[in-house]
Length: 104
Picture 1 (tube, rainbow, N blue to C red):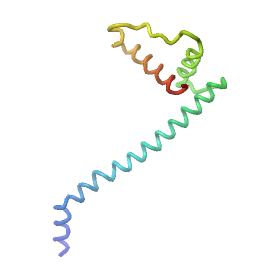
Picture 2 (picture 1 turned 90 degrees about the vertical axis):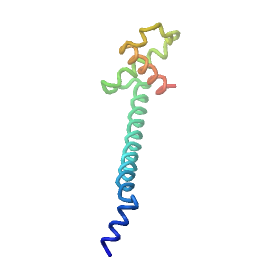
Picture 3 (picture 1 turned 180 degrees about the horizontal axis):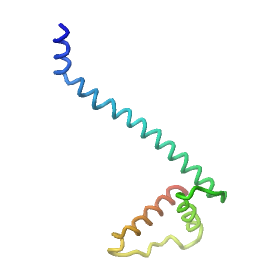
Picture 4 (picture 1 turned 180 degrees about the vertical axis):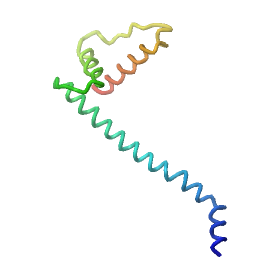
């Protein structure tokens, strides 16, 4: 009788479904927690920058970008054509976007 239950369960596909879906739910929960922690850290860094308090070294690009945002007329991109394919230009674009999304 037990052998029939095991065979029926395997044929139903439930073991495969459980083995695929349960880890995804767990991973998604961990990602949610990680996103919350990242958002809290980013908010704390933004607050520290606004009150001119020290921040961690990897976040100094936010402080530099915040200062540029406060100066008038400095928001124009001078890059043209194939220069947009250069890695340094792309990093600068992503940094600019991160600063805008953090402080606006």
